Image 1 (cartoon, rainbow, N blue to C red):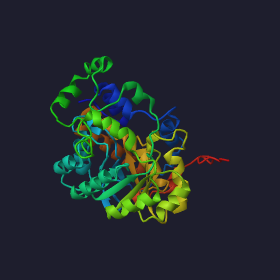
Image 2: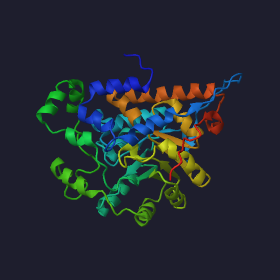
Image 3: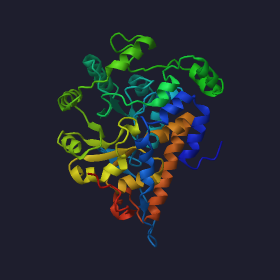
Image 4: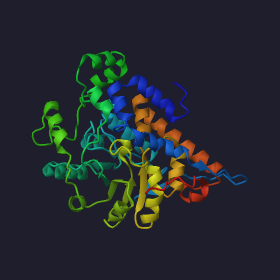
Amino acid sequence: MPVITCIEDLKRMHRRRTPRMFFDYCESGSYSEQTFRDNCSDFQKIRLRQKVAVDMLGRSTRSTMIGQEVSMPVALAPVGLTGMQCADGEIKAARAAEAFGVPYTLSTMSICSVEDVAAATTKPFWFQLYVMKDEEFVDSMLERAKKAGCSALVLTLDLQILGQRHKDLKNGLSAPPKMTLPVMMDLATKWGWGLEMLKTPRRTFGNIVGHAKGVGDTTSLASWTAEQFDPQLDWGKIARLRDKWGGKLILKGILDEEDARRAADFGAEAIIVSNHGGRQLDGALSSIRMLPPIVRAVGDQVEIHMDGGIRSGQDVLKALAMGAKGTYIGRSYIYGLGAMGEAGVRRALEVIWKELDVSMALCGEKDVKALGPHNLLVPQDFEGRWA
């Protein structure tokens, strides 16, 4: 077993073990990838205030997210094609999250279906919905998530149309992968991944194939998916889905103060400050840079979460100190999953928890809920002055 000290160690293992198209799917943004890079680099501009001569015994990272108790305020974000990073990836990630005591969010575009994950876990998880043109499919998907016992709906608002991701096009991304010569040459070096995939029947989008009208195989799936994201999604349609769901609602993809105010008035339990991991509007500001103005605008009205760029417990600390009540990791746990399966997801969570716990102590804090701006040194121009 290699010595794993940080998320970067898992990333290197993930790259070696997973086919290129799926590693690139994880490790890429849209267009020039400016926002993708800024999500991480902007965290590095924020510094922590060290405090000494403070009793550090009895520390706690425990908190709540939308009323649910969590071992630390970190959830596993929805990530499409997780079951292509590792066989039965969604099941393995959900089990690791459950064991660690943090929320798991299943993507609409998962390989394992919502029923698969429910059957393999013992506690409720969250379900993320992409709004499709096929209203019948969307309504059916909500009913399936309810039946599976999902305790919250994460409604993604920033993917009405797809931002172009150059690597996915060049790699011919598909699930399962098409057996072109370059793909076969790559798979020949990823035999461990291939042997695991041969043992599972789950190799395409389990929530869609056999459930969406006219989608019975991977050929029909490709054409259906390409034209199904709803470009007419607006607040009226969001209201219909809120009422149809009838449970806890989280709105994901807020990156603007005006949108945040509208979302806060909407009755959602939380909003997620997010730019879709830099995979949609390239040139948008990073999530951490937009977090403070959104907290100032609506932080007293709705629970604010954030995702994008978190690669360490120090990043989690910074987001919480800037006003977030919860954070999400996507790539950080996918690196672990691709590297070592379920054990890798657990290791990613352990790394982030330990970094958060130790850094919190060195900042003179014993309770994660006590973190605030007083723990940070933020550049005066961090949020920027824009015309």
